[in-house]
Structure formats: structure tokens, C-alpha cells
Length: 424
Image (tube, rainbow, N blue to C red):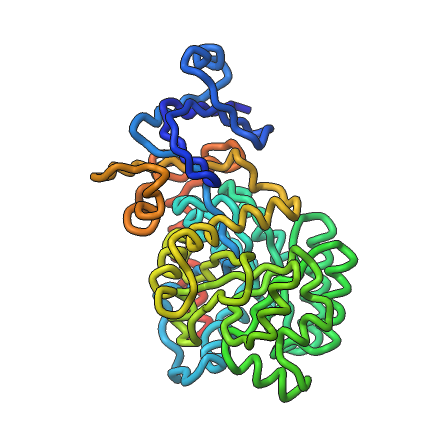
């Protein structure tokens, strides 16, 4: 196990934003990083790989608060035969059609290419929400192994739903319990409108038994609220709260677009976290996120649109200038809140030995006082040259070091064609 020394780095503390020149010693077996003097460098020569970071920035890597790796092979896929006229039809005709055609090989390819894309864009931890109703059993283990091959940490769940019948819902519950018995993970639910009272009750039981949390889409579209009111006589957050979903600090509520102020207050007063997904909301034309009244426990996600969380954070800021109470500081805080979520819940894989190196040759001064200007208008994932995950160098000079990237992409293109043909 080799140590890694980042020599002559310009280090940005991700919490204080203090900027300083440092030599940074990184270990795989110790989550903290160590700053060493230039005179101490030789003492580490024998068991240390040195990465010269002269003129480069180093800071903590990113993490994604909500992703859908299963959608990775949809890029370029043909449009459905009938154009969806609303969000519910989009789900039925696109995503609920795609996920029914997934098998073990397609799940693995999707996970591998997602992990590589995340790593190259600076994310070393993925919170993922998976669905493959005709290939439920063992699906989370496939994703976990693929992510670990690339070298990214994870917090997985299976998207339990009654939309494909009670037998498949039961398989989702069984897969969840089987997986989180041996791994860190969450209990995934699709959304209130596809989850029966019995399935919701069983999911909360698993959550409580394993001291986990629920990962669920909430009020992404008005349809979710309309169905909840019609079938249960209450709004979505009220239903989830009464069931105990919001009692866990591990619970993740995704989207949260169409909420009233009472629902926002219930969420704000709970230990649950919210994930916004700006670009996905724009793509699906479902509305705009507004964090007013939700408190500070808000994270950014990509919702399977792509694997670049820095891009998502910037989009949320620009769109939010009209629709949200977001500022430059809160946009950055939401980007980094995922680290607090992971730390507060004692999840492994989010330590300080996860770092990115950026070749950001700015034409203007960079300092603590103007960092947000660079964050929003300068730095992009294209500046990332090297990525350290758990003390391990998984991207070097913009190339994945842990797996054969080109071989995986070649295979994924073949798998994508197979998937598309099966859907036609």
C-alpha cells in the first residue's frame, strides 16, 4: 500500500476556503491528510508516490447526493413511439420501459461507465437510486462491485415500487434487506404514488430494523400530490411523515418541488435531508426548486442526467436566481453538504483522503475573499487532472488508472445497442 505525496500544491480548505501552499501526505489507511514541510519529503521517498502539483489547486473531492446509474446507457437512445405529453407519460414511456429491459450485464456496464464519469468529474462518492424490476436480485451487489473496481465509494438502494405488481415490490424489499445486512445502504422507494401502504410500512420496518434511512422521490411533479390526496386523503410529506420516513437522519427526500409551507416546515423540523436536481427538473419540465422554508439540509444531485456534480451546482445557482433563495455561498454549501450528511451518519468513504487536483490557470487572482466568483464563473470539471479516492490515485493526467477505460466503453456501446434493440 503506497502513500501519496502531493508536492507544492495550492491547497483550498473545503470548509474554511483558506488557501495555502502545502505538501500533502495522503494515506489509504488513514482518512485524515497530513501537511509536511519540504525538509520532510525525503523521509517518505521509499514508500511514497510523489505527484508534483506545482501551479495546481488541490481540494476535497465531490460527492453526488442523488444519481441513477441505471440510466447511463440511455444517451442517444431513440425517442419513444409516442411523444410523452406529461411527466407521468415520460416515466411510463421512457424510464419505466428502459428499466424493465435491464439485466445483469446492462446493470454492470451502466455502473462502470457511471463510476468512471463520476471519477473524472471529481466525485469519489455516489449516492445511487437503482431500478431494474425484471433483474432485482443481486443488482445492488453488481453495482457495488463495479463502483469499487473503478475506486469510488457508494451508498446504494433499490427503488422499491408497486408499479410492476406486488411480487416485484416484494423482491425489491428482499433485495434491500439482503444488501444492507452486509453493506452500508439505504431503503429506496420510487415515489408515494407508486408505493402502497403495505409496501411503505414494510420499507420503514426495514429502515428501523437496520438503523438506515429512506431514499425517495418527493413531489417531483404535481401528479404525486394529486394521487396522494385522492388515494390517502393527505399530501405526500404528511403521508411519509406519519409512516416514520422522516424520523431518520439518513433519509433523503429527492426533488421536493411541489410542496406547501406546512410540508416544508415538517421537513425542516425533521432530521431528513433534501436533494435538488436542477437540470433534470428542467429537462422534464416539472418545475423549479425553491429551498425557502426547507432549512439548510439541502444537497445537489444529478438525477442520472450526467455525472458532473459541479455542473449541477452551477446550474442550480443560475436557475435559482429567479426561482430560489440561493446565493453564491449557499450554492457552494449545498455542493458540500453531502460531506456533512455522510459524516453525521458515520458512512465510510467520505474522509479527507479524497482529493482532486485542478490545473486552473486563472487570469485573475484567486483568494479566499473571491473564491465564490471562481467557483461559479471559472472552475469546471474540465480543470480536474487527478483524483484521489480513499488515498488511492484513481485518475492521473485525466485518465482512469484502476480499470481499462477504453475496453469498458467499447463494451458499453455494444450493451447500449442491445438495450435499444430490446426496447424497440
